Image (cartoon, rainbow, N blue to C red; front, top):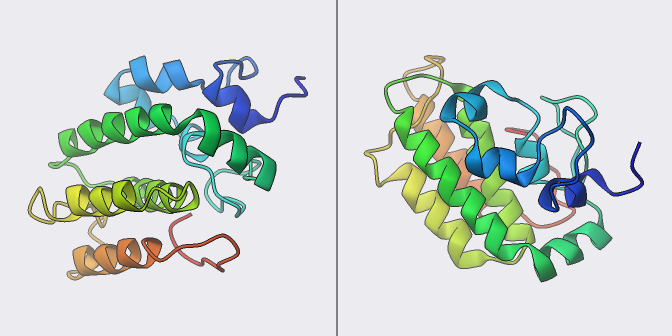
Length: 165
């Protein structure tokens, strides 16, 4: 077991065996992105425990400062890579993809990347005619997803967050 924080290990391609690295996500197939459920918490971490992935790493102040200083470019590569993947899924219906977008927006806010956070919201909500995936849960699922993403744009460290983790 490594002493390296699992989020830093992810970005430095030094994750423990069986856990994803940055290169896995940047170079992996879209099928890998869709079927692997432990990469998003490492790629777009926040200060809250995930309700979706048990034992996922949680962001700390020290790790956040490291990410701000050294990993902004890689973060933007991940955002772009996931955008391409997401738009490829427009004909599918996966609610967890909306959770991933929410996590991405929150993470960009924590990095103080306001414009990229807003751009992600615009890309995912309007560029593709509100092609959001609500899993068929309700007729207004797209509207609910947009409201959640709008709330994510207001996210700050210490906020209590109850949805889309």
